[in-house]
Length: 247
Ligand SMILES: NC(=O)c1ccc[n+]([C@@H]2O[C@H](COP(=O)([O-])OP(=O)(O)OC[C@H]3O[C@@H](n4cnc5c(N)ncnc54)[C@H](OP(=O)(O)O)[C@@H]3O)[C@@H](O)[C@H]2O)c1
Image (tube, rainbow, N blue to C red):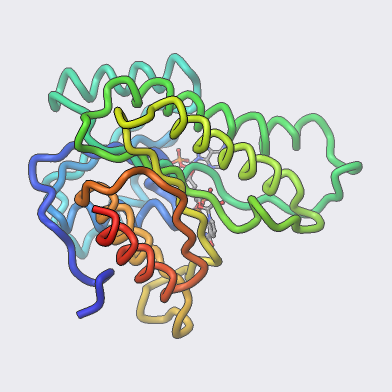
Protein backbone atom coordinates (compact mmCIF):
# COMPACT_ATOMS: atom_id res chain seq x y z
CA UNK A 1 0.00 0.00 0.00
CA UNK A 2 1.37 3.47 -0.82
CA UNK A 3 2.16 5.96 1.95
CA UNK A 4 -0.74 8.19 0.91
CA UNK A 5 -3.29 5.36 0.95
CA UNK A 6 -3.10 4.62 4.69
CA UNK A 7 -3.89 6.89 7.63
CA UNK A 8 -2.44 7.08 11.14
CA UNK A 9 -4.75 7.17 14.15
CA UNK A 10 -5.75 10.74 15.04
CA UNK A 11 -8.74 9.88 17.19
CA UNK A 12 -9.38 12.52 19.82
CA UNK A 13 -7.88 15.29 17.65
CA UNK A 14 -10.04 18.31 16.78
CA UNK A 15 -9.30 19.65 13.32
CA UNK A 16 -10.52 22.92 11.78
CA UNK A 17 -10.74 23.07 7.98
CA UNK A 18 -11.94 26.45 6.66
CA UNK A 19 -12.24 25.98 2.89
CA UNK A 20 -13.10 22.32 3.55
CA UNK A 21 -16.08 22.59 1.20
CA UNK A 22 -13.77 23.00 -1.83
CA UNK A 23 -11.99 20.54 -4.11
CA UNK A 24 -8.79 20.34 -2.08
CA UNK A 25 -10.54 20.80 1.26
CA UNK A 26 -12.79 17.79 0.72
CA UNK A 27 -9.71 15.57 0.44
CA UNK A 28 -8.45 16.89 3.77
CA UNK A 29 -11.86 16.40 5.39
CA UNK A 30 -12.05 12.79 4.17
CA UNK A 31 -8.50 12.03 5.31
CA UNK A 32 -8.96 13.37 8.86
CA UNK A 33 -12.32 11.57 9.21
CA UNK A 34 -10.64 8.34 8.04
CA UNK A 35 -7.92 8.92 10.64
CA UNK A 36 -10.56 9.12 13.40
CA UNK A 37 -10.39 12.88 14.10
CA UNK A 38 -13.27 15.25 14.82
CA UNK A 39 -13.47 17.67 11.89
CA UNK A 40 -15.02 21.15 11.95
CA UNK A 41 -15.81 22.61 8.52
CA UNK A 42 -17.21 26.13 8.53
CA UNK A 43 -18.81 27.40 5.35
CA UNK A 44 -19.94 30.88 4.50
CA UNK A 45 -23.14 29.50 2.98
CA UNK A 46 -25.67 26.80 3.77
CA UNK A 47 -25.64 25.72 0.13
CA UNK A 48 -21.89 24.93 0.12
CA UNK A 49 -22.22 23.14 3.45
CA UNK A 50 -25.12 21.04 2.13
CA UNK A 51 -23.20 20.19 -1.05
CA UNK A 52 -20.25 18.91 0.96
CA UNK A 53 -22.56 16.93 3.24
CA UNK A 54 -24.12 15.27 0.18
CA UNK A 55 -20.72 14.46 -1.37
CA UNK A 56 -19.63 12.79 1.88
CA UNK A 57 -22.61 10.41 1.88
CA UNK A 58 -20.20 7.50 1.23
CA UNK A 59 -18.25 7.92 4.51
CA UNK A 60 -19.21 7.90 8.21
CA UNK A 61 -19.78 11.53 9.23
CA UNK A 62 -20.57 11.19 12.93
CA UNK A 63 -17.42 13.18 13.76
CA UNK A 64 -18.00 15.86 11.10
CA UNK A 65 -19.21 19.26 12.36
CA UNK A 66 -20.47 21.27 9.37
CA UNK A 67 -21.36 24.81 10.45
CA UNK A 68 -22.48 27.89 8.56
CA UNK A 69 -20.19 30.65 9.75
CA UNK A 70 -18.25 33.47 8.08
CA UNK A 71 -14.66 32.73 9.10
CA UNK A 72 -13.15 35.20 6.61
CA UNK A 73 -13.09 38.27 8.89
CA UNK A 74 -10.91 38.75 11.98
CA UNK A 75 -13.99 38.76 14.24
CA UNK A 76 -15.59 35.81 12.44
CA UNK A 77 -12.50 33.62 12.68
CA UNK A 78 -11.94 34.55 16.34
CA UNK A 79 -15.55 33.66 17.19
CA UNK A 80 -15.27 30.34 15.38
CA UNK A 81 -12.12 29.33 17.25
CA UNK A 82 -13.62 30.39 20.60
CA UNK A 83 -16.74 28.31 19.91
CA UNK A 84 -14.66 25.30 18.87
CA UNK A 85 -12.60 25.48 22.06
CA UNK A 86 -15.77 25.91 24.17
CA UNK A 87 -17.61 22.99 22.55
CA UNK A 88 -14.84 20.51 21.74
CA UNK A 89 -12.15 21.58 24.19
CA UNK A 90 -9.31 22.32 21.75
CA UNK A 91 -8.12 23.18 18.27
CA UNK A 92 -5.44 20.60 17.57
CA UNK A 93 -4.87 21.03 13.84
CA UNK A 94 -5.86 23.48 11.12
CA UNK A 95 -5.82 23.08 7.34
CA UNK A 96 -6.47 26.22 5.29
CA UNK A 97 -7.27 25.41 1.63
CA UNK A 98 -9.11 28.73 1.33
CA UNK A 99 -9.75 30.19 -2.08
CA UNK A 100 -9.93 29.03 -5.65
CA UNK A 101 -8.90 30.16 -9.12
CA UNK A 102 -9.30 33.56 -10.80
CA UNK A 103 -8.39 34.44 -14.38
CA UNK A 104 -9.28 36.49 -17.41
CA UNK A 105 -7.52 39.85 -17.09
CA UNK A 106 -4.02 41.21 -17.30
CA UNK A 107 -2.96 43.10 -14.18
CA UNK A 108 -3.49 46.50 -15.79
CA UNK A 109 -7.04 45.49 -16.75
CA UNK A 110 -8.29 44.58 -13.28
CA UNK A 111 -10.69 46.79 -11.37
CA UNK A 112 -11.03 47.37 -7.66
CA UNK A 113 -13.64 44.62 -7.31
CA UNK A 114 -11.22 42.07 -8.81
CA UNK A 115 -8.46 43.24 -6.47
CA UNK A 116 -10.78 42.97 -3.49
CA UNK A 117 -12.10 39.50 -4.38
CA UNK A 118 -8.99 37.76 -5.67
CA UNK A 119 -6.37 39.33 -3.42
CA UNK A 120 -7.67 41.24 -0.40
CA UNK A 121 -10.56 38.96 0.60
CA UNK A 122 -8.50 35.78 0.35
CA UNK A 123 -5.40 37.17 2.05
CA UNK A 124 -7.64 38.56 4.81
CA UNK A 125 -9.36 35.20 5.30
CA UNK A 126 -6.01 33.41 5.70
CA UNK A 127 -4.70 36.07 8.08
CA UNK A 128 -7.93 36.00 10.11
CA UNK A 129 -7.81 32.22 10.60
CA UNK A 130 -4.08 32.19 11.34
CA UNK A 131 -4.25 34.92 13.99
CA UNK A 132 -7.30 33.34 15.64
CA UNK A 133 -6.15 29.72 15.62
CA UNK A 134 -2.38 29.76 16.08
CA UNK A 135 -2.38 31.02 19.69
CA UNK A 136 -4.86 28.22 20.57
CA UNK A 137 -3.25 25.47 18.48
CA UNK A 138 -2.20 22.48 20.55
CA UNK A 139 1.55 21.87 20.61
CA UNK A 140 1.22 18.42 19.04
CA UNK A 141 -0.88 19.77 16.17
CA UNK A 142 -0.05 21.27 12.78
CA UNK A 143 -1.25 24.31 10.83
CA UNK A 144 -1.19 23.69 7.07
CA UNK A 145 -1.63 26.45 4.47
CA UNK A 146 -2.44 25.30 0.93
CA UNK A 147 -1.27 27.17 -2.19
CA UNK A 148 -0.62 26.33 -5.85
CA UNK A 149 2.49 26.46 -8.00
CA UNK A 150 1.25 29.81 -9.28
CA UNK A 151 2.75 31.20 -6.06
CA UNK A 152 6.09 30.87 -7.85
CA UNK A 153 5.15 30.79 -11.53
CA UNK A 154 3.60 33.92 -13.02
CA UNK A 155 0.51 32.91 -14.98
CA UNK A 156 -0.54 35.52 -17.56
CA UNK A 157 -4.16 36.48 -16.98
CA UNK A 158 -4.15 35.06 -13.42
CA UNK A 159 -1.71 37.46 -11.84
CA UNK A 160 -3.86 38.15 -8.80
CA UNK A 161 -3.75 34.45 -7.90
CA UNK A 162 0.04 34.41 -8.18
CA UNK A 163 0.35 37.56 -6.07
CA UNK A 164 -1.99 36.34 -3.34
CA UNK A 165 -0.43 32.87 -3.18
CA UNK A 166 3.02 34.40 -3.08
CA UNK A 167 1.89 36.51 -0.11
CA UNK A 168 0.70 33.31 1.61
CA UNK A 169 4.09 31.79 1.02
CA UNK A 170 5.68 34.69 2.89
CA UNK A 171 2.98 34.40 5.57
CA UNK A 172 4.19 30.84 6.08
CA UNK A 173 7.84 31.85 6.26
CA UNK A 174 7.12 34.59 8.79
CA UNK A 175 5.00 32.26 10.91
CA UNK A 176 7.76 29.64 10.94
CA UNK A 177 10.28 32.30 12.00
CA UNK A 178 7.99 33.69 14.69
CA UNK A 179 6.75 30.35 16.03
CA UNK A 180 10.26 28.89 16.30
CA UNK A 181 9.72 25.53 18.01
CA UNK A 182 6.37 26.38 19.60
CA UNK A 183 4.10 25.70 16.60
CA UNK A 184 4.40 23.53 13.49
CA UNK A 185 3.34 25.46 10.39
CA UNK A 186 3.38 23.83 6.95
CA UNK A 187 2.95 25.20 3.44
CA UNK A 188 1.74 22.75 0.81
CA UNK A 189 2.46 23.92 -2.74
CA UNK A 190 0.27 21.89 -5.07
CA UNK A 191 0.35 21.13 -8.77
CA UNK A 192 -3.00 20.77 -10.57
CA UNK A 193 -5.43 18.68 -8.54
CA UNK A 194 -7.69 16.18 -10.29
CA UNK A 195 -11.33 17.13 -9.97
CA UNK A 196 -13.97 14.44 -9.56
CA UNK A 197 -13.44 10.97 -8.11
CA UNK A 198 -9.82 9.92 -7.55
CA UNK A 199 -10.45 6.87 -9.72
CA UNK A 200 -10.97 9.09 -12.78
CA UNK A 201 -7.74 11.09 -12.29
CA UNK A 202 -5.01 10.98 -14.92
CA UNK A 203 -2.35 8.52 -13.78
CA UNK A 204 0.22 10.42 -11.77
CA UNK A 205 -1.93 13.53 -11.30
CA UNK A 206 -2.23 14.80 -7.75
CA UNK A 207 -5.58 13.99 -6.11
CA UNK A 208 -7.33 15.70 -3.20
CA UNK A 209 -7.11 12.37 -1.34
CA UNK A 210 -3.31 12.46 -1.61
CA UNK A 211 -3.23 16.04 -0.35
CA UNK A 212 -5.37 14.84 2.55
CA UNK A 213 -2.90 12.07 3.33
CA UNK A 214 -0.03 14.58 3.43
CA UNK A 215 -1.79 16.96 5.84
CA UNK A 216 -2.77 14.04 8.08
CA UNK A 217 0.86 12.85 8.07
CA UNK A 218 1.99 16.39 8.95
CA UNK A 219 -0.41 16.30 11.91
CA UNK A 220 0.58 12.83 13.06
CA UNK A 221 4.36 12.94 12.69
CA UNK A 222 6.47 15.20 14.92
CA UNK A 223 8.32 16.81 11.99
CA UNK A 224 8.99 20.56 12.14
CA UNK A 225 6.88 22.83 9.93
CA UNK A 226 8.19 23.18 6.40
CA UNK A 227 7.39 23.93 2.78
CA UNK A 228 6.28 20.74 0.99
CA UNK A 229 6.05 20.63 -2.80
CA UNK A 230 3.41 18.31 -4.25
CA UNK A 231 3.59 18.78 -8.02
CA UNK A 232 1.91 15.40 -8.69
CA UNK A 233 1.04 12.09 -7.10
CA UNK A 234 4.68 11.05 -6.76
CA UNK A 235 5.37 14.39 -5.07
CA UNK A 236 2.71 13.59 -2.48
CA UNK A 237 4.41 10.26 -1.73
CA UNK A 238 7.76 12.10 -1.45
CA UNK A 239 6.23 14.62 0.96
CA UNK A 240 5.05 11.86 3.31
CA UNK A 241 8.51 10.25 3.11
CA UNK A 242 10.14 13.61 3.96
CA UNK A 243 7.86 14.00 6.98
CA UNK A 244 8.73 10.48 8.16
CA UNK A 245 12.46 11.11 7.71
CA UNK A 246 12.29 14.41 9.61
CA UNK A 247 10.20 13.03 12.50
N1 LIG B 1 -7.89 22.76 -7.36
C1 LIG B 1 -6.64 22.78 -7.82
O1 LIG B 1 -6.34 22.19 -8.88
C2 LIG B 1 -5.55 23.46 -7.06
C3 LIG B 1 -4.24 23.32 -7.52
C4 LIG B 1 -3.22 23.93 -6.85
C5 LIG B 1 -3.50 24.69 -5.72
N2 LIG B 1 -4.77 24.83 -5.29
C6 LIG B 1 -4.97 25.68 -4.11
O2 LIG B 1 -5.75 25.02 -3.14
C7 LIG B 1 -6.54 25.99 -2.44
C8 LIG B 1 -7.99 25.54 -2.53
O3 LIG B 1 -8.34 25.43 -3.90
P1 LIG B 1 -9.65 24.67 -4.36
O4 LIG B 1 -9.47 24.32 -5.78
O5 LIG B 1 -10.02 23.62 -3.39
O6 LIG B 1 -10.72 25.86 -4.28
P2 LIG B 1 -12.30 25.78 -4.20
O7 LIG B 1 -12.81 24.46 -4.66
O8 LIG B 1 -12.82 27.00 -4.85
O9 LIG B 1 -12.57 25.86 -2.62
C9 LIG B 1 -12.06 26.92 -1.88
C10 LIG B 1 -12.92 27.14 -0.65
O10 LIG B 1 -12.46 28.35 -0.04
C11 LIG B 1 -13.55 28.98 0.62
N3 LIG B 1 -13.44 30.44 0.47
C12 LIG B 1 -13.35 31.33 1.50
N4 LIG B 1 -13.29 32.57 1.04
C13 LIG B 1 -13.35 32.50 -0.28
C14 LIG B 1 -13.36 33.48 -1.28
N5 LIG B 1 -13.28 34.81 -1.02
N6 LIG B 1 -13.45 33.07 -2.57
C15 LIG B 1 -13.52 31.74 -2.87
N7 LIG B 1 -13.52 30.74 -1.94
C16 LIG B 1 -13.44 31.14 -0.65
C17 LIG B 1 -14.84 28.41 0.04
O11 LIG B 1 -15.57 27.81 1.12
P3 LIG B 1 -17.02 28.31 1.59
O12 LIG B 1 -17.65 29.02 0.44
O13 LIG B 1 -17.72 27.06 1.94
O14 LIG B 1 -16.78 29.20 2.77
C18 LIG B 1 -14.38 27.32 -0.94
O15 LIG B 1 -15.08 26.11 -0.78
C19 LIG B 1 -6.27 27.35 -3.09
O16 LIG B 1 -5.26 28.02 -2.38
C20 LIG B 1 -5.75 26.94 -4.46
O17 LIG B 1 -4.92 27.91 -5.04
C21 LIG B 1 -5.80 24.25 -5.92
